[in-house]
Image (cartoon, rainbow, N blue to C red; front, side, top):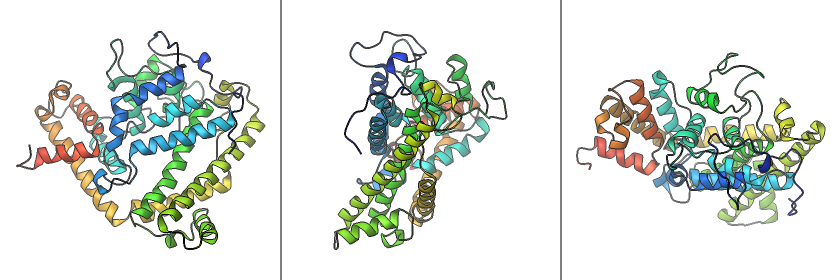
Length: 398
C-alpha cells in the first residue's frame, strides 16, 4: 500500500460541506467537524465501556483476546489506511469505525440474542439502532442537548453502513414494507438521514474494514484459544494458502510468529483486493461529488467476487469451528441466562434498579419499564453484568 497522500477525491466527504448538526453550535477553530465527531466519540462513556465488552470470549477468559475496544481501534486503523489511498476523508471513516460497536450488549452476540428475545414484546432490540440512540439520546454529557450532536454525515454512516434502510427513493418512514425501528423513525423525523440511499464512500469503507478486522482477528483469537488448529484451516480458501506460503518461506517458525505473519498477510490481501475492486467501480461510475455516490443505487467500495467467496468460506469455517464450539456455547448459554434473569427481575421489580434508572420506569411490566431495563443492561460491560447478576441472585452477594 502506498504511503503517499493523494489529493482528496472529488467524491470524498468534505468537512466544509457538512450538512451540519441537529443542534447548531459554534464549531471548533482547530478541528474539522469530522475530527470533532471522532473526539466526542472517544470521550464518550459508551466508548470507554468497550474495554470490557467482548465479541466471542467473556472478558475473564484471557486478557489477550480482543475486546470491542481493541476491535474498534483495529477497524479504525484499516479504514484510515484505505481512505488515505482512495483520497477519502480519513477522519469521518475513523469516527464511524470507532462508533460502530457502541450499541452492543455485554457478552457479544449471545447477550444481544437474549436481550432481543426479552424485548420482543416491547419493540425489540437491535445493536445498530441502539448505537444511534446512544449517539443521539443516551449519552447525556452536554448542557444544551442529549447525545453527542454529531454531524449529519456521521449519523448517516451509522444508520446506513449496511446500505439503504428504506427500499426506494421517496418512500416514507416505514413505507414500502420496511420495518423501521421506532428509535430510528423518531430521529429521522427531526433530522432526515435519507434512508433510501447508500451512505458516502467513507461509511462503506468503515463497514468493510469492520469485516476485515473481525474475520482475521477471530482467526487469531481462535487459534490462540486452541478452538481449532492451523491444520484445520488448510482447506479454507485464502487462509490455508497464506499459512502454507508462510511455512514454505519460514520453515520451523514458532507458532505465535506464524499466526501473526499469516494474519497480517490475510489482512493485506483483503485490503489490496478491496482497493482494486473499489478503484474499478469508482472509475466506471465516475462520481464527481459525494451525492453522486449516494445516488448510484449500488456500493462503490467492495470486494471482488472471488474475495467475497473467500470471505463467505471463512465466515462458514469460523461459525462451525469457533462460534459453535462447545466451550463458546457453554459461555454463551451462561451469558444468555444472566441477561434473561436480570431482565425479568428488573422488569418485574423495577425498585431493584439503581435510582437513576428506576426513575425512568413506569409500573412493573409496562413498555416504559422494559425499555429502561434494556438500556441499563445493554450498557453493562461483561464484568459489571457478571457482578450485577451475582449481587441479584447470590444470597451472599452484596
